[in-house]
Length: 192
Image 1 (tube, rainbow, N blue to C red):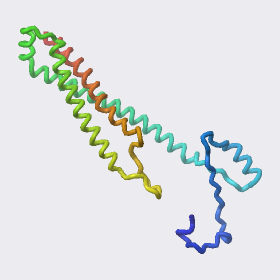
Image 2: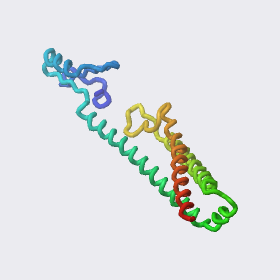
Image 3: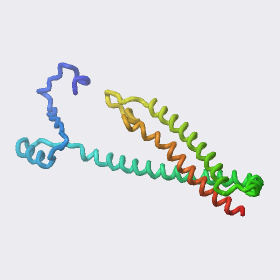
């Protein structure tokens, strides 16, 4: 590890370079407390660094980031539902005369609401599908993991993780369906 800085002829025996021993864990892990005791008995100056000191805050930050992501997704769905509700109410309000004529010829509120629900659900599905496709393309263009361990490389999805963005369009469509249906039926009830 020191060769790139000091060259190949570095006399390691003359330098107080600490000796490092790499421990490779299996699936069961290792007993850190037992290993510390054994090191204290066999090599009194040895130190076991299992990286928990710097890894614990990173794991906590990652957990908080994950929670923030779920909160953000909930807020986005709520904002989507609110926008679709307002758009549906505006569309219904701008077509009051047409709705009254439809009622005169026998159209039920459920039939009228279905037309609006179908239109807004289709638009939400299409828009979310395009957004998810562009988002997946942007993620695919992110830099790959570098061999030298560069910071913020290798971000993105791995394997089946690429299926997660595909859940966004159906989720947006379901949100649009219910928001439009509730708004349409409520608005049509108020027009009586």
